[in-house]
Length: 430
Image (cartoon, rainbow, N blue to C red):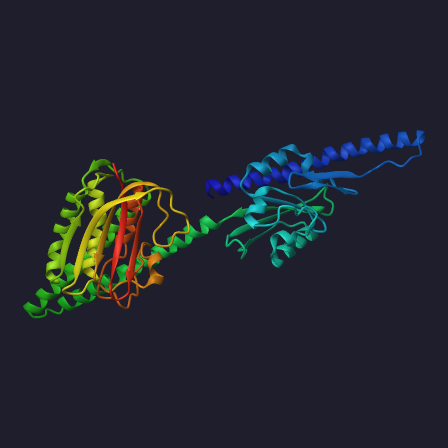
């Protein structure tokens, strides 16, 4: 059990216990009230008002006649304090499944109307199964749990039903605690995807290695054995690259990589990355050049880390550009006067300021427009059928994204399928 689950469980128990304990105090008060009413009725025959006021911050006060003690949470200061303090949704319903209390978190998680006191539970939950489960809890007094995914919010919500029972009698209502498991579900899905992607990426080189080893065990001619050993070395390099990139991405995502920021000129960093990738470009007879502007301000950056991000972009450009193609690295100053609106489509929303904009353009196969928003995801590959022989782990762009955003910059891409792509990223000017 995680710390979050333990905290929510304790909060649920405290809420339920506070309501149940309040019954005894209310019963004692009722007995005193009855005794007082009997005494006063001898002196005055006028009928006594026996209606109780129920109100909350969420709705105007209303009269309920009579109101069971468990269904007046407003009288329990501890209950109200806990209900408003936790980020868990809390709903109290009566025996007819009418809402008598809810906190603000419940309205937020369910995207409901603000004024639902006195309405049916179905009006807030908008889930037939969840409403029927509350009926069953009130009918038999047994706790129940349910996970729902409302279409209105897209959240994953876990509902825990607790019957409100007074002195072993029939339940007078139910307490519903709502936990938001959306983030946990996303993390679990990411974990499953990671395992699936890693196993997929390892399956091909390991299968090739197994086949090559079995062939070598049959003592092939020396020239064939030599070629097989070279192929084995390539497959081992691919596995080693995958493990190294996974380790690097893990360190970046966990925040264990410290950036050594300093005002540095962008030109030398670009030149070093271009020279490192040039041998690969020469083997494909590609033209690669750098065109940094002469009046660039220095950037506040970690030169080694930005060089790594730039090298990842250049490696992709070389890999997906056919022989004889052209790759260009450019840099210029970018002045953003006001923060970009969130709805901007040509690039991620960018904060105001002076930035150094670096671009890597190629004349390669391009990227379909529908794929552009996903290319920076881990292990994501555009149309595996087209890129089957290109190799790579699918982690290079994810690493580049983490490095750039760690500097406070943004990274994005533009492309026309069949004509080439341009990757852009920004760094804060020093």
